[in-house]
Amino acid sequence: MSLVGEGLVGGWRRGHAVVDGLTVRVEPGRVLGVAGPSGCGKSTLVRMLALLHDPWRGVVSVDGTAVPRTRYRAPAALRRRIGVVFQAPRAAADPRLTLEQVLTEPLRAGGERDRTVLAARAEELCDRVGLTRDLRSRRPHEVSDGQLQRACLARALAGGPDYLLCDEMTAMLDASTTAALVAVLGAEVGRGLGVLTVSHDEPLLAAWADEVLRPW
Image 1 (cartoon, rainbow, N blue to C red):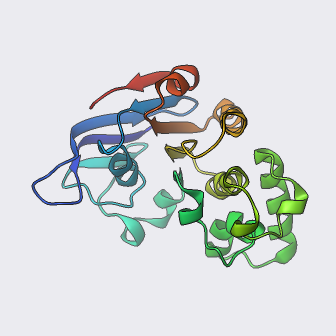
Image 2: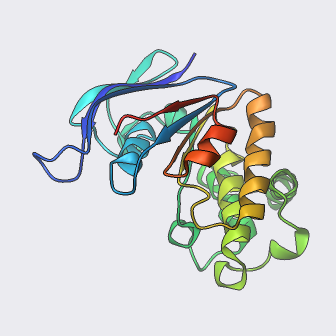
């Protein structure tokens, strides 16, 4: 049982691989940290593991099932098992939506239309990530980066993923919000969630991760 990227090679410009032969294994109930400086390929690794970017070589597998394609060509059942939280919440959230709509996006995309069900699920998710009720009706420009990142984390957890990939999730947040979100994920890991977090913040990884890889 694990999310595995084996022998991954890839990048954005042919002939210039930023991930070159890397193998990573994200196991349930554990936090794997990946350290490296800005621009070294950490985000590319996350996008390959999240089935958002085609590796040039190598295989991504979910609990032993190889995923031959990415994005909407990948099986929906496998895509739903992987959640992602990106570094910049404002770039990752539709500015036209309220925070409640942002965090229930995966449910609505999956066909859920019952407003009562969506509202109940939104309340549960907000409680899990520490997002207060008064913020649910606000839009991204009306909240702080930390509040919006809480909504993005809730969105990533909404579909009940088995694995969560954090791409510099706390890089734009203050220390107190960082600690709060790490605590939220600590509870999720205790329930069996497997987490990969990439960062250039070595002290954060040392405190948070069970194991840290330094491939760059």
